[in-house]
Length: 283
Image 1: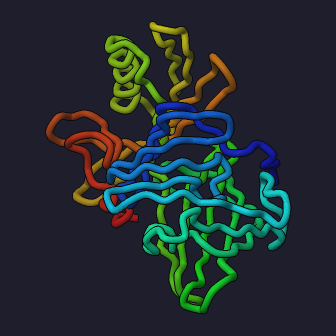
Image 2 (image 1 turned 180 degrees about the horizontal axis):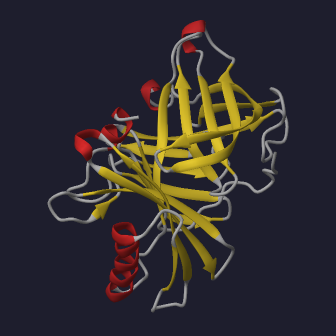
């Protein structure tokens, strides 16, 4: 259907907003190591190949560093069929078990086909990538599945199953917002104004061009869809495509109209926005 040779890609300041209310933000990137902060107060460091467990993770309960040994070269994308095997364990054997039980052990990974799926952020062509923990007892079995979009170079859905034959816990992508911390306040305000204007007045399929006054960054902003959710709230989908500088990048998002302020807000990200769970409840 399409190639997936390009591995996941991130830049400092990116926000990833999910249907379970989780917001992850990239804070530093060095080589293929990406440092993340989560809105629940936790932090972790991981390679950009997200099937590999974090090399460091910490929250209020403590912290843990991991070592990952692979019996084959863990490439991107993972092998067809279940061929990629890695073993993850904490570097400190005395660390509390609950800090690493979710990802430790031997894992077998592989791609499982291609399809098109719809999530709150939009409709995407995806590659299904699955990992199963094959070590330990049956109660320690786990299966993680990611639906990777080559267009945005990140997954748009993740499923976790903890019981063989059980129903997975599903987390969908709601939005990706580009980092803007280095922009001036007027530049951020102008960019937000352009998005708000299109969301309020634009027709589905309509696009506008916007250049950031600070640095000449150019975006195409396209309105891609509209839907109604609980309590008759109107939500609209849009895509930001950064044309320059650097390589082109795509940032999809869902925004819902706040009946009080009249502004369009990404669920869970902005004050006064609806909760991500309300988006899923209406599907």
